[in-house]
Length: 347
Ligand code: SF4
Ligand code: SF4
Image 1 (cartoon, rainbow, N blue to C red):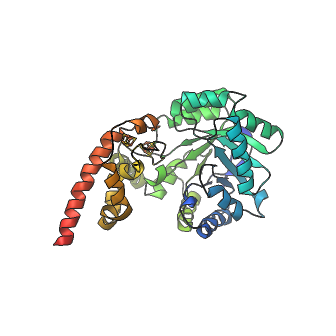
Image 2 (cartoon, rainbow, N blue to C red):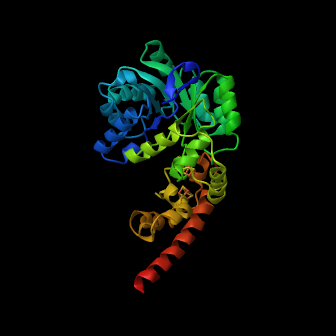
Image 3 (cartoon, helix red, strand yellow):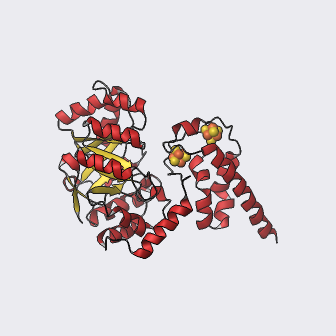
C-alpha cells in the first residue's frame, strides 16, 4: 500500500489509515478482527482517542506483538494539565505500549480551546514533556473549524492537523491543505465518507485520491467496509465522467444543511439524540420503513418532540447548522411518514 510522508514528522504512513471510532459499537471480537484485517491489508496507521470508550483498549489487544510495525495515533480532549497527564497515562496503558507515535490535542475548534492549548503551561506542556522523554514521538492537533485550523497551522507548534475532508465538507478545504503544505504540517483527513453520509465509498475515496499527500482515516466498523475501501484505494485513481456526475448529484441531494454526525452538539438539554434526527431525510431513502418508524429510531423522534428551543446545541455545532429548524422539519416529515406506514400496516 502506498505511503505518504506525514509532513515534518517524516513518518511514512499508508495513505489509507484506520479511524477507531466505530469499533466501540461492535463486540470486542469483531473490533479486533477489523483491526487485524487493516494490518493484513498493509495499513500501518491506526488512529483512536481517549474519548472513544473501548477503542484504545481494543486496538491495544489487536496489536499485541506487532507494535513496531504500526504508527499509533491517539488524542485527548483534556484542557488542563492534570487531565492530560491522566489521559496520556491511560492511553499508554490501554494501548499496551510505552510510546505513542502521534499524540493529538483533540477537537480544538474555537478560540478559547486554541488559547488553552497554545499555553505552554497548559495541557500541551504535558505532551511536550512526554515528547522530550521519548514517550510521545510527535505532536498533532485536530479541529472541526476551518478558521481555527488555519490559525493552528500558522503557529508552527503542531506537526500534523486532522480535519474533516470529503467532497461534502467545507469549500475552503483546498486552501487549508495548501496552508498545511506550506508549513509542512502533515494532513490527516477525518470523515472521508462524511461520517457515513456518503454511501458511495468508491466516489468518496477516489475524490480524495486526487490529493496524494494526505492520509485518509475512514472510521471502520466491519471487515467488508475496509476491504471495499482498500480495493478502491489500490485501484484507478481518476474519477470517471459518470462518477463525477454522480458526485454532483450526491452533493445536491445531501445539500448544504448536512449533518456530519460528529455529535459535538451533545449533550442536548432534553436528551435528544440530535444526529439521528438530523439524518432523517437521508436515512428515509435508505432504510426500510420498519427501521424508521419503530424501535430505536422512532424513540429518537419521540424525544425530538421535547426540544425546548434552548439553542445550546447550535452554539456547539462546528458547522453552524440550524439544528432547531431542522429538528422541527424532520419531526414533521417523520410524523407524516409514520402515519402513512401505520395506515399501510392496518390495511
Ligand atoms: S435546542 Fe433542542 S435539540 Fe438543541 S440542545 Fe436545546 S433542547 Fe436539545
Ligand atoms: S448537528 Fe452539528 S454538531 Fe450535531 S452532529 Fe450534526 S454536524 Fe455535528
